[in-house]
Image (cartoon, rainbow, N blue to C red; front, side):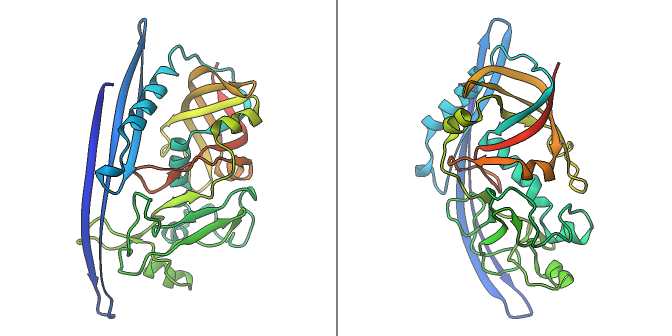
Length: 305
């Protein structure tokens, strides 16, 4: 083990408005991040692991340390894969990052600015029927859960995509008035001096029935994506174009095989959502505004050698 970081936070806030809102809320959260180095010859790989909770007693250091060691050692000896179109399985950490990008396209602010690729698609099928996406900051196990939003409205569960069909965008009071609808209690503030923005607060996919090993067995051959780089700069939220650096492991015969590195994964957000073939059961809350889960996506282009 190379190092470990512990972060804890306690917050309390109140909102009072001229329209009569008087609310207050408080919350605690903490997480530990572990980092591991693995070496073989002249090669060194790094790995990380998380454990998240509401207080220190919720944390599991052994799980975080084991995950860091697993991530570091399994990439030793990685090579570039051959280019082609393959089925990929996103690791829960990668899925959480992907959901963060997706959530940004489903905000009223993105809609108002003409920067949502889902504009004018309410009620349409935008994803595989296997995919249900919910923003639920009332869930106490979500790292970003809270009793109220940045405008003092009670937090609520907001289904965004149900069985592949786009149900709604998230709104604060301002974007809701602009769109002619009601706030979804999705106002967000950077502090008491800032005006409220809007965004998803605790995103997660409804889990499926199979864990990651079972999903790999069903996939047979493909690539397990364990991490990505340049995700925010490699995704166009308006067109949906998706291209990012990645590393992971070959899936061969239904199990993980040789490690892979220095390749690009490319598609579009729209196509990736439509090509979701399975959602894993391994839901994992991380220290961010989205939960991770193994996600199987077909027909993704990888560019290596």
